[in-house]
Amino acid sequence: MSSDPWGRVDETGTVYVRTAEGEQVVGSWQAGSPEEALAYFERKYEGLVVEIGLLEKRVKTTDLSAKDAQSAIDHLRAQVDEHHAVGDLAALRTRLDGLVATVEARREERKVQKAKQTDAARESKQALVKEAEELAQSDQWRSAGERLRALVDTWKGLPRLDRKSDDELWHRFSHARSAFSKRRKAHFASLDAQREEARKAKEKLVAEAESLSGSTDWGGTAARYRELMTDWKAAGRAQREAEDDLWNRFRGAQDVFFAARGEVFAERDAEQTENLKTKEELAAEAERLLPVKDLKAARAAFRALNERWEAVGHVPRDARPRVEGRMQTVERALQESEENEWRRTNPEALARATGLTGQLQAAVDKLRTQIDTARASGNNARADKLAKELEGRQALLDQALKGLQEFGG
Image (cartoon, rainbow, N blue to C red; front, side, top):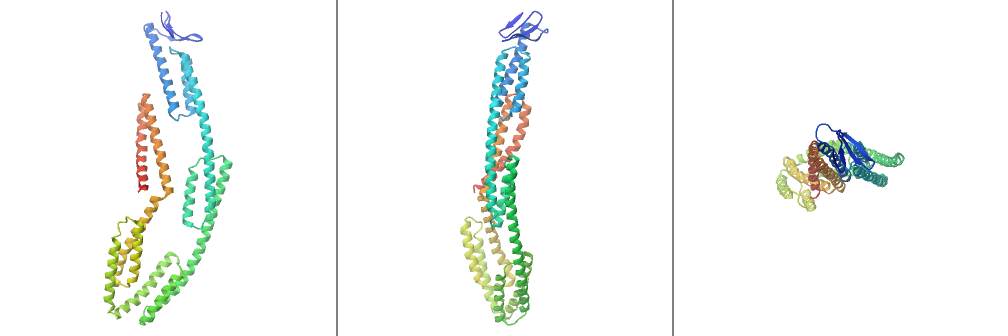
């Protein structure tokens, strides 16, 4: 017969473990010596020690759910209670009892945390509702509309409350958006009516401009065209499609008249040539504003150049598209710089980018911890699987960090 402090093997090969309740049969061993029998069941005990240690680590260092943790505890407790190992089984039960207490404490903590999150979500949604109701009265149609859409995205990212509270807040939120949409629709309907009136007025101006295009009363007709231009500006804008067509006809009629006048007054060719030279110099000066380094200074300089440009006068007709196109190219570049600056300094976009980066960083850190845990437990297959997932999350994080740097200038 062979024995150690926690177990023994009798003459028949039956293996026992010693417990506070007395000896319990572990199993039967016929294949080798009693010492080998004890060693075998002691190794099974050590295996339980390792499994319990890993579970303790998971409970302390990962977000293992209480349900999964309790299931793992029950599984290990069943193995301990079956007495198929030789060692201090009471100590293992004590450790498992401690794990149960820890899991229950974490369960309560999560309940408290969830309650706090719900309260925070309630406050956030109430704030969104309040802002939406204020925006519903705004006349800043574009910015207020964009902000309301952003509020919807923010709402969707918040946790749901109890059904009654969530429905009540959503009803107020939705009502505010509907009220804004109704006001905006009424505004643009009124605007459409104004544009229709502008179209009718400009139709009359175009008809008169076209009737004057063949006149040879150079002074009187030129003066009348200036009056028509004043009336044109005062009429307001028509619908975009009509506006462009009417403007092309209006400007075309003037072009016909002034081209004819230019042919009659050939001596003005020299003046127009000088105008072209001046405008080309102004265009070159404007082009030197690019690439834009100081947007505010570049804008001020371009306005000053544009005032000088407007004061120059006509240039030869065939050169006009080319030289005007150069100035328009600079103006578009300045507009793009303004739009890029707005996007770069947009605090809402920065907040979203920062939040996304933080979420991705947390996910990467979590995966790394899970990989370390899997490696430590010898679960290389799971570790490799998590490593592949980590590669994808890391790529997304790198991309998000790169985008976030753009906000820093």
